[in-house]
Amino acid sequence: MRGPSIDWGVILLKPGEMMGEKSHGHNIVDETFYFIKGNGVMIVDDQEYNATEGSIFLIEPREMHNIRNDSENPIKIIFIKGDYKPDDKI
Image (cartoon, rainbow, N blue to C red; front, top):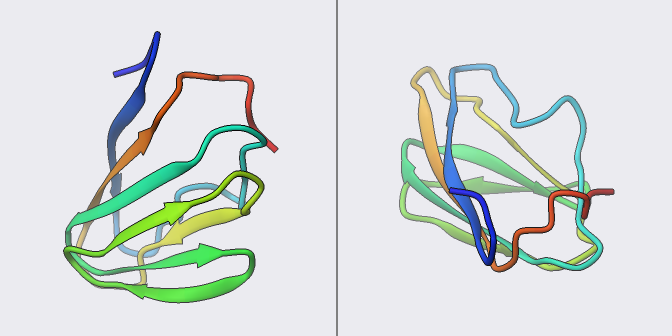
């Protein structure tokens, strides 16, 4: 669901996959990640955090972030950005 006032969706990562090839960030918007199924690794500014099912992470503007699935099962994550700003990416 994209625009005009919200950007949200579901990310599905298979075992061994990452959300992106490298970490990314946003200058203006914050982003929330909710791990709804499975366990992964949330990476924020090169720090790794166990992201167990039910975990929620709020990523502030300019925090570089990524997600990795180190498990043997697929994981599902909901992402929510408060504003739809498709060009706000670093």
